[in-house]
Length: 86
Image (cartoon, rainbow, N blue to C red; front, side, top):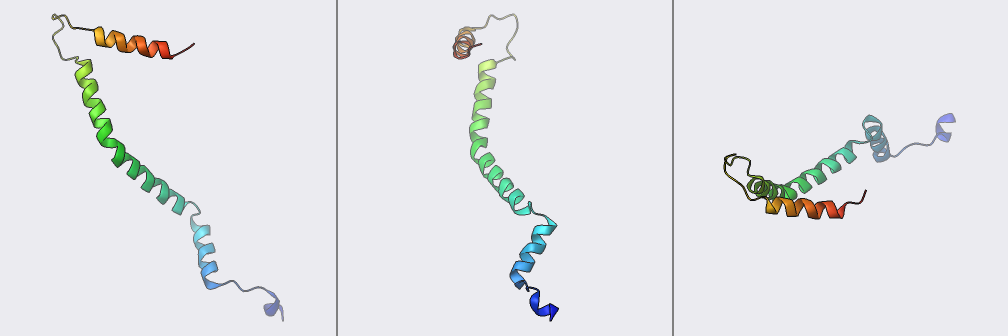
């Protein structure tokens, strides 16, 4: 009689509970990795282009004895400074 009163779990539910007990965050970790990889592959070309432009803009390989035009750098820093309020 005691066996009849205890509820029996469905086989699918039992497998789901076993998987949940093993690693409850496994599916979440897979989803995070998939979304990260998707975002990285989308943003990588943009990041590479920005780094190339920064390298050309910064140009630290030029000869120190040659005067460089720092107008663009000064304007850029002035605009950034005006956007921040202390």
